[in-house]
Image (cartoon, rainbow, N blue to C red):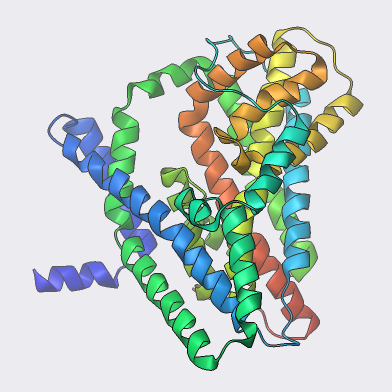
Amino acid sequence: MKNLINKWNNLSLVKRIIIGLIVGIILAITVPNVAKPVAIFGSLFVGALKAIAPVLVFFLVMAAISQHKSGHETNMKSIIFLYLLGTFLAGLVAVIASFVFPVSIELAGGAQNVTPPGGVVEVLKALLLNVVDNPVKAIYNANYIGILSWATLLGFALRGAPESTKTMINNFSDAVSQMVRWVINFAPLGIMGLVFDSITTSGIQALFGYGQLLAVLIGCMIFIALVVNPIIVFLNIRKNPYPLVFKCLKESGITAFFTRSSAANIPVNMSLCKKLGLDSDTYSVSIPLGATINMAGAAVTISVLTLAAVNTLGIKVDFATAVILSVLSAVSACGASGVAGGSLLLIPLACSLFGIPNDIAMKVVGVGFIVGVLQDSFETALNSSTDVLFTATAEFAKWRKKGKEIIIKK
């Protein structure tokens, strides 16, 4: 038994996750009723990640800024530019794909008990109010914009503190990071529970009626992950981008796909950044920020579903107006985390650009919830893995300028 445990621990985390994935599929297909209790592992895993992530971000950012040495450069400007560029290009790709492969949909019942934002101003206002949210409330509600703002201010305030105080904060940061590593080691069990729960959920059957819509949504996201993002990476590091792209998809995208939560994937991304040898002063801020504003998948969802509604209603749209939609979807997507329901509830906002009534737009949101079983998984995988990809790209671009060799650590 001891040898078996040692062999299991010697396997890479990704291999263990794949084994958990296979076991979950087998149990769901063969003995769904008997194995029903395994679903709790998925809930426990996601719950633990969501619980520890806000505390991790708070202490990491505070520790990094309080101990930041003058003259030590970070890459935040470059990373934010890449985040915004990637989100805009995602919206543009979705618009072009919707023109090449126009989709009409059977409108479902409207989404229940949800209220979409009234406009872009409302979305951005909610985002700004999150910056000044009560710090304890921000941690409790996993409001990462608020956590980042207060952790940054505390970090600057503590730069003049005694070394003993800084050491204590750093020790807390290390302790929380260790707790995160313990939680991540349970990923195989968590993924097994999550995939079992997904397969045994009856909602998957409803997806077949929306096959063409899902094909455009998922196709756009795969195209961005495997074509658009690699081009952006290559232009920055002037080196084959695919080893880095595939590493981010493998080690970040897989867990994000099944947890369907960018917040829950923050600890996984932090761990991957450390493995890649990136600057902790940078990634401790860029990763939680990316979970808020780096929303390529959300931009795709908003654009594709909005243009599907336009096609369904027979509204004629010129390409120039559709490009404006890609800008609107990118801006809205950046504020998606400040709105309950995320990207789907921003669809009525985009629909208003074409004069589509709110009651019709909410039926499109209803369709979004139906296809969300797959759409949300792919969207989160793209968003979260790209957080690491662009953070690493900015760092490697700086290395290239300094003549330092870029090595993708295994």
